Length: 342
Image (cartoon, rainbow, N blue to C red):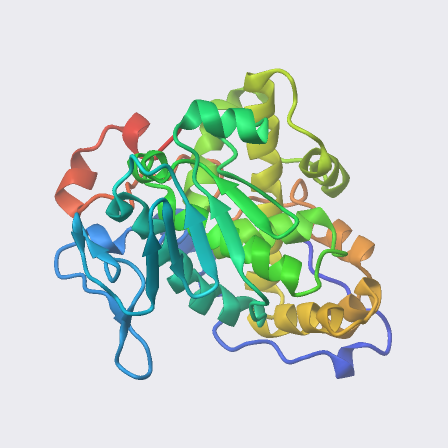
């Protein structure tokens, strides 16, 4: 059974209340249905763009509808540049703007959803560079395609948008990117990497893909790391051996996901998480903010969430569904095609 979080004496009364409805899924539901993955709903019949409180459409298919430019008044367009809200993406002029626009559309939706999850607001703008091809991406970032982006110092280089679309990973990448940015500009850089990285992939709903990537590593033994091992790998530069780097990076990300899944789903929901992040944002020492939200310092919290202790949320099976395909195509998909890889 999963280890329960202990509470430091005297801290329980001051903690934020747990959210009703968390955990959202029973162990039986998770084993049957796997991790949630809402980012492919636009491929289903009857899908339409979302609307804000004023009734305006936003997000996917509101800048372009396929190859058709929709001329939104709040989108700035120039040769090799598109801007929407705080996001500006630069790209090779050989690309049609509608090939790149889906990145901005998904980032716009992510700002709404991830901002609400984390309780953090944007500050300034986020420049995004979209390289011409994967070779250029690897040259600019020094990392392989299993790492979808390089974010540092308030700027991002992302894998070419057409590549991410082909891999069915573009919405996930946009949500992960926005989460990284909000945590950075929200003053949360002092939090440990397992928490920041775990929050980014949790916000991006990457559980399906990360769990399925583990399938090739499970025959060799445990795929999860201790908190210290995951922290060290996430902080390290890419390993010189590409195959080893791919394995270690994905296992470290999956470890961070499992830790944050347990934290949010099983120990209070987003309210306590937002209290922790708000405390750090407002200047509290990270350990103090963590004690106020969870009754534990960060090191003790990490030990209690150790992904190697207790079962994985959905077990060790490859998730037998293709969330990016309509039902008929999904049912016919071969198991090896049920998740995207590089």
